[in-house]
Length: 256
Image 1 (cartoon, rainbow, N blue to C red):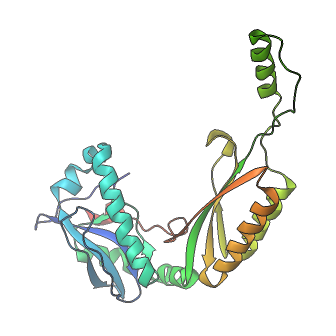
Image 2: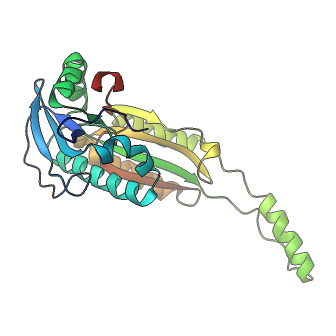
Image 3: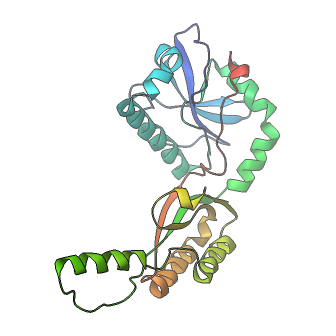
């Protein structure tokens, strides 16, 4: 949900992408609204990456605009591009989409209260990227059957074969692979219930991986694929900014 804040007197709100410990040279052509530039503003001992966006569009109209999927898709992509561009140059504590502040003063006050925790987060996330991993099971057919005698016989046997497919579930094989990824990662967050998600999904999670271990991750993925490709399929995405391990958000009561 968007953070509801009061419009500033200037007609602008501060849209926060994230914070870094130092300024960095980032080549980002446009901010979240496609118009406002991205600024690096010193704030409470940190560097805040912001855009000054229209207070009406991102204030009183924000909730309605977020229900417009075309608007939301464009703004979300621009937000991610900004955060990703900063992440390529410096460790960033990314903010959630639509994190807004009335002024630099309210932003500074919010960060000042959390300064000790934020410094710990920078230390924890320095030199690391987020990767998302999903493991899908490949259903196995029950085996070959005799040639059908009729069309009805064919359909009946096909239905039986579908019912007799081996249930897709995690195995000692996948558990060993996940354990290997856990050993490589500095932190892990597991996804929600796999039974209610994508079909045949048996495990999902996000890994915070030190960049020095990227080749080890690639080797682990290649080994699992080599030995298990007939039974399991792995999707690995990244590197990403550490969204799953820190996501700054505005406290509405502090911004009004």
